[in-house]
Image (cartoon, rainbow, N blue to C red; front, side, top):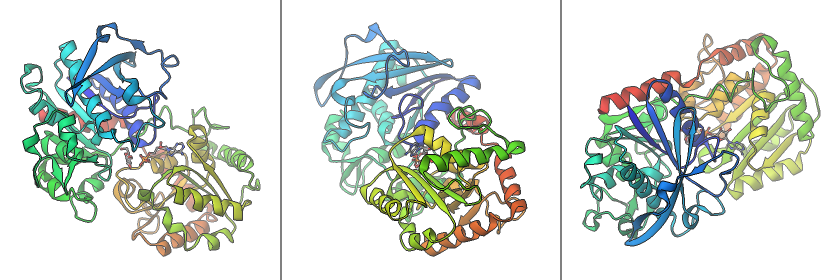
Length: 478
Ligand code: ADP
Ligand code: GLC
């Protein structure tokens, strides 16, 4: 089966969040299952062409697509790795910016351009694929472009499109001018039509209406997005396609996130050498300038600092928490108000809380290995990867019962025979705080703690099962 997989970020080339992790490993697992995989992404200026040995394809020296009737040049860099063809779409005009996602006035155009280039590349290569697998709003126009602008081309006649929604809240909402930029028929933009939602041109709505099948990244999130509370305006549209929506839990890359082999941590360990986890804790405390005491429970956070992640919940109780025998390490970047919050707390309690404002992959691994407890109080969480990483590293998660967190973490009080962490229900500071306090006391119950660590470390979150689910969806479409 021939698959084209479109993504706006992909490990190891460029990453801001979990989509990159998924894009980095799902195609590899699918290729092992016999799929011929082609991955397409923009060549942002942060991608190091030399380091990855990307080769410019001379066949695309004079390639262009038309965006709002203007010819726009592009070129293509290529890499064959792990049996997968990676195609990087290059354009200084669109992809050399301060960050990979922007608030620039042409943000819509950047990804319209990307999608036209992909279809244009397939035409120029005369590559007849079976499935185009699109991810999030940045590639959501593909099925509609195939039905309209490219309808004349038999190459796409039988192509089926799978749309994976990683986060329903980021929809790609722009003004009506996007219709023209995308070369889509203007008359299809009207209130309640395929292109329109609350007056905006909405990329994600188009993906939902026009794709053959849709999935999200956990079974619980697949149900949640059908509700008004969680569907962020798209629940009505999603309900019209309820029979075509499934939830497939993301996996994790065991070659990268594995305490036995992780090259980013001071000391490798497994369940039978848990003593060595303490070395990671001690080194982490040293790095953060916190007292190096193995008996003080250490709480960890690695996250985008965004509304979704629920960090407001700390505000009412952070001072109380800081008076307890506890330490905390926070790694994150994002919205100013959360940055200021953690910065202030770290200045007020330098012996208790260390905050690093930034993106740091190595430290992310070190926190996952060195912390005792990992915190994810998310408002909503389509899947979440960090709780799975933590579980596999013997670091006990405290999570809110939502999306993929609800599907992967079982509360030890609710389910004593399978509990692997702590789960609170309502998005309320009091509930979160109570769980933290409970976890801090459970930390002293070494037998119980060990049992939870064992369950987490033995659980199999590898991609194998999930990749097979994707393969089933592909087969169902063709
Ligand atoms: P989301 O995609 O919503 O951000 P996920 O839990 O799916 O959430 O994935 C987040 C990924 O990004 C994880 O691999 C996590 O370790 C990583 N990450 C997030 N913030 C940072 C950061 N500041 N530094 C390093 N890695 C980070
Ligand atoms: C999104 C979600 C996250 C999910 C990731 C990968 O960024 O916020 O929960 O794990 O996509 O699917």
